[in-house]
Image 1 (spheres, one colour):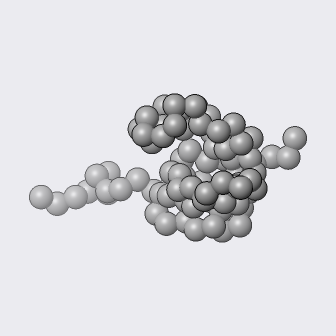
Image 2 (cartoon, rainbow, N blue to C red; image 1 turned 45 degrees about the horizontal axis):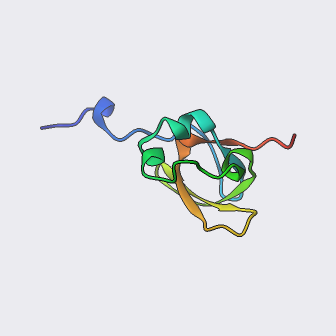
Length: 85
């Protein structure tokens, strides 16, 4: 069976770069399958940010938080640019 362009893996929609500051989009994360496999109440700091992008591989990013917390892998469509409020 041949794959058409429409059947291939989805491409990341954000143009994040290594070192970018991000936060997790609450709605996108809480409605994802990853949320069902995580803590029932995710830590608030992931939604507040900032986290720094360490690695971008395909549609996933490794994020380092400015807290004593482990680095996490998240789908790129669950992240948004962090804005200093």
